[in-house]
Length: 293
Image 1 (cartoon, helix red, strand yellow):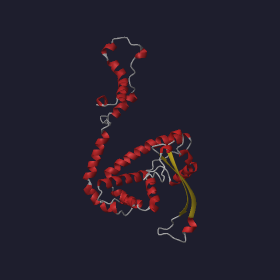
Image 2 (cartoon, one colour):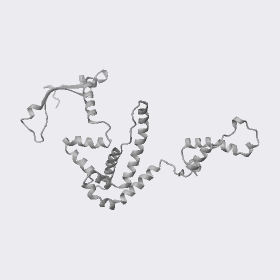
Image 3 (cartoon, one colour):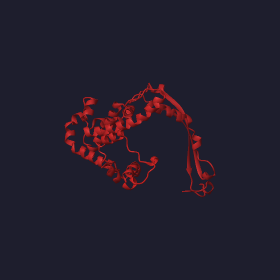
Image 4 (tube, one colour):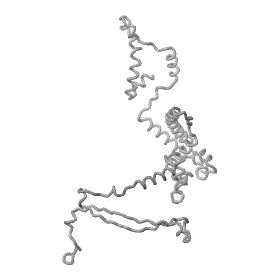
């Protein structure tokens, strides 16, 4: 059955590898070849006893299941039907989904099939990634890392909460509702970043982003962005110079006594460039005898 499954699949590489393995055995069983003299070096090598025992063990595995490009679509449809049909069960846990008593209670109230799908998906990704990471750490005599189950749970909770919000917009799912409320308060945006970083949706920490911001500001060269050369002869340049005072906002309503102590001054030098349809020499200038308007 496994051979028939491989032959019906579209994996050409797997089919070629299977033929290479079956060719010596089929040649040995050919009656015509049995009567001919075969050199000892060209005789078919029969499988060892260990290989035969392993083959019998593998016979218990379902090899008839072949992953095709349509398989993820089928799994997605089945999972979507499962979530849509489990609305009554989700309504039973609506209290814990909207106003949970704890984070663990909120995670336990999420639909099991959806959580199991993402947990298995993320766990497999972590295993594959840790395999290469631990291989490099072993060469450097460093201890191996283990799978962070807490991080997988946080990521699963975020994904499932987003899907439930999309599937049932009438329900105020706690996590997505909190995230949308945080977006309305600019001072709370660092907490939103902590949520996304805890779920590993963001790869870099806040400190790393601040360091990159300083490096980019230090290495910035505005002169390199100025359009120059003969290909930009029809360019109109407008230079602006202004002095700006920045006042730090320490209180929402403002504090006139605290503002002068947290101010900074900067000189703004701005160049605005416009591409003109005609050369500057062809543009008519306004005069008393010939007004433009």
